[in-house]
Structures are given as structure tokens and as C-alpha cells.
Length: 218
Image (cartoon, rainbow, N blue to C red; front, top):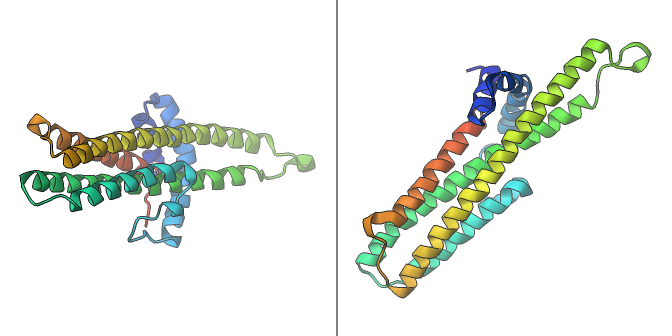
């Protein structure tokens, strides 16, 4: 898939009409190259370090990590038994959610960095007569700026979505901690595990959507 085609895909995924989504492709072509360069210059870390991403993405990663650490601390203090075994299984699902949260944050951070690079490039237009941008250059810059703003809206939407999913994860973890401390019964039908699995699936879908902007790590 070309970067331009990926731009149309991410625009449609964000709920933009086809005509607008096509405009997103203009900025996405430049952004895809920038994101690829970012990935080559900074290999994917083997551990989760929220301080390697921007503040807008960092909070969700830290929140998910803290919830997981709290859960593990309580789980490790429980005596062996069926409840502990079931909660240990849920703990593995929580770990997968944290990993997906981190993957989303990495990709979102790369998008925002690429947008910053594009903004800097737009601030240096080629001169026309008398040092002013030529009409064609100016129109091109205006189109790129509009497309970048639409793509920035996709990044903002991803930030909000990540924060919402992190909040859902923390709520589910708090419920599991309460059950483990009180030695209560898990909700019937495995609803707690299903809730965490759903959060993980939605985080994975969000990561895939951000992947369409440009490949991270190539």
C-alpha cells in the first residue's frame, strides 16, 4: 500500500468523507516518509518506557502500567486457589492490554513528531518574485496545511480514544483488585475477563489504524 493510499484509509477510518479523506493523502505521503525515518533512527524499545513518548501519550501508558503493577502486587499476596488462578489468567490479559497501550502511544507519538516536522517544512516556503511564495507554491502549501490539520485531527482522536480505553482498563483492574482483596466471586460468565479482552481488541484496532499512517520501525 502506498502512503497516499494509506492516507485515504486512515481518513475513512476516522469517519471523514471520501473527498476529505483524499486530501489527507497529500500530507500522509510526507508523513509516512518521516515516520519511517523516525523508526529507523530509533529502534523499538524492548521495555515500556513512557518517558520516550510525548506527554499527550505518556499519561495513558503510565496509568495502564500503574494499574497493572497494583494488580500484580495484590495478586502475588493471594493464597493459592481457584480464585487466584482465575485472576492470574486475567492478569495475563491485563499485560496484553498494557503492551497494546504502549504500541498505540509509540505510533501516535511518531505521528505527532512527523506532523511537527511537516509544520516546520511549511514554515519555509520557496520564494517567488520579491521573496514571496509563487502563487502555485502558495496554493500547494495551503493544501498541505489543510491536509495536515485533518490528519492532526486523527491523532487527536486517537489520543482521546487511548485515554478512554486506558480508563476502562483501570476500572476493570480496580474491580479485579477489589475481588482479590475481598476474596469475592468473579462476575458470572467471565464478564470481567471479557471486558479486558475487549479493551485489548480495541487498542489493537487503534494501533492498526495508526499503522496505516506510516510504518513504524522500518
